Length: 218
Image (cartoon, rainbow, N blue to C red; front, side, top):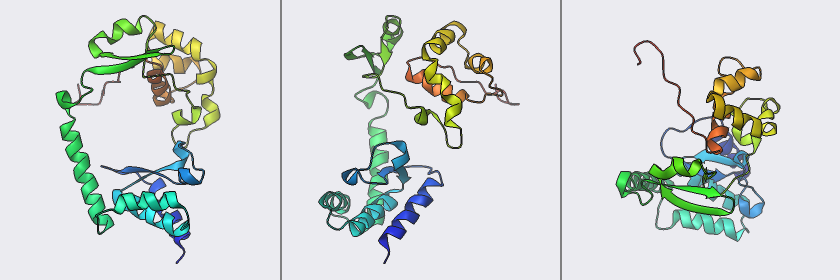
């Protein structure tokens, strides 16, 4: 049997669809054989598919001990990938209920950072810290332009976001309008809105959601 062929078909099928409900992130090229954490090397699989993917990888690389160990951890005390998927879904629902609202140990708190310092504070105090130069998160993460681009959009078209970073942040503080920033740079009909919005959020800016103005929706 051509295990590599079946593995490739499994990954290709996963990349051409969207999963509704619980799914698991899988490294297409395993990290133990040089794969990275880049989004291009990740695929969203159902628990059954994820289990099967690891079994196929063991068949493809039978002498890789790391892959064998990973597969063993997924199938321990389970007779089939169907049982594995059922348990994973049940566990996800249980954890979601257990960690909802005040039951969550992180409830009402948020991480902020400034230079090399990071601390957890109550959300009620967030604005006062942001006014003194603190930002959301534990540390600053380099923004890769590819992570801001949705599938099918030209990466080169949005390089200005990183090249004009300081200017964009200052303009946004003044006008508080993503649409105005985009129109100034030749974009129309909300083109690029999602990309710029996500980037501003990563910089700790509060971005208001657009209200639905369709008939019958207030």
